[in-house]
Length: 310
Image 1 (cartoon, rainbow, N blue to C red):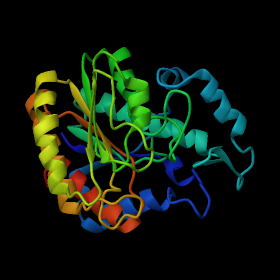
Image 2 (image 1 turned 45 degrees about the vertical axis):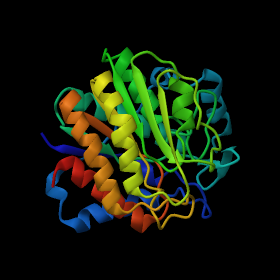
Image 3 (image 1 turned 90 degrees about the horizontal axis):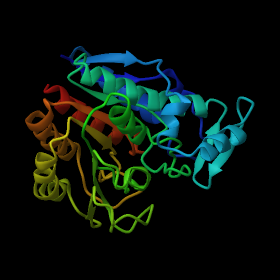
Image 4 (image 1 turned 180 degrees about the vertical axis):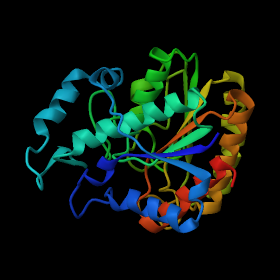
């Protein structure tokens, strides 16, 4: 079975203004890097048309929040509006957000039905800062939370694990999924930066693993081996979601960590190894952070090459 590379056309139509680091350049750079690598043969590229339904969205988010997005959404091309202080939306942003969540749901179905061995969803807007009541940090809908709840409630999967290695804590994912039976959330992030919450969690199903400024990918791997792997092995999930953020790279300016492309391959190898041990390698990975297009593209390539074993 192949590794899926899944995206959608609205990635480039979600416009956030010239000053936002979360721009269409991100996914374009990843696609160009994949083409330049000559490794296209190793992946099944899928331009998905599946969109999450309102029922899918409302498993994770409030109806009032969904209505607020519709009310704020610009009616004309070229216009932008603030969904919140740090999250800009434009005319096609709701379709982009529904498409991103839809890609992750569809990837989940394809991996569980053995059409794909695993999958990487190259989508935007990202999701892991979007909580039950609102968006934040460039995120509109929480793509992974929506897909995880779909897996449990619709596909009747018993247990899913979510591992988040973004430099910024996945506070929205924790907000939606804390104490939810059948889910374990593992989050690796730099302490003391945006969103300035999440180091200590009272939720029984959350393992927060803070890093300090200057920490390397080697330190991250050490923590994953010590704190995540034994817990995942004990939990025995049927599927592992990966919130794949690449903003811990040493060339990024929004964090102070010291990761390299090789580190992202090493982290992915650890996750892939435990996935093969507990759930036949079933992984659905989803793009989160990473705002330097060049290093993002190289880091994503290292990640999906490792998933595809090439």
